[in-house]
Image (cartoon, rainbow over all chains, first blue to last red):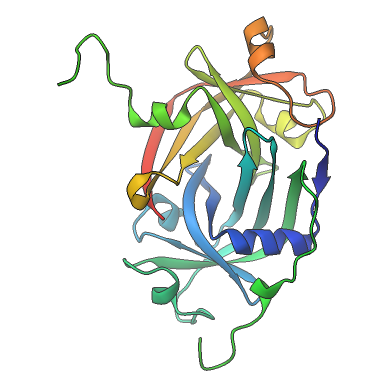
Length: 144
Length: 128
């Protein structure tokens, strides 16, 4: 039997930022809903992309959402899961600290930021590492 | 040609399989929350288990949840994400099959078994 260990906020942020694809959990018509999404962690905020006019894009502006990723090996029974909860805003007049077209090529996206107010994460059966949080390093001015 | 004696399984059924890793999406104190679980499919329904003292157990009994699984490593780079939305119910008398197939991974007495009704199933393709 493996040990279930909590992850620190820093580790949650680093693991979520390193995963790149996960899911946005939100409320739609009063019911729980989920959409698989691409996202980034940059400058202390979390950003995700959704197709314009998709159910998630229509529901989440101004709402509290959870962004979640996990990596679990079914046969080895080990892995981790991380959730960041915060208020979500549609990217409007402000500019993302990265090139959206470069980050998510191939189509037009609605881009949202999530200011994470609460992290939670667990590791099952694997050594807990303390990664260098390079995903949190701001991009130098001029490249954004 | 498809053998008429073998009904074609919908794609979402093949993504779901008979066991795997999924996520229970639920509402906790009016906010969205999500927990990764291992699951099995018994009699066509998703079952998962947890401990009585978890936020998950407290929030999902007789509540509507969304249960999400995905396969993002499909040939051609096109992934599929499947979400089952329905009421989540406590299984009053878990069968021996359920006990045998749905093992607890983590320590602690995870002796509550839940089943998710399938009120709605949505499958979306995910470009990865």
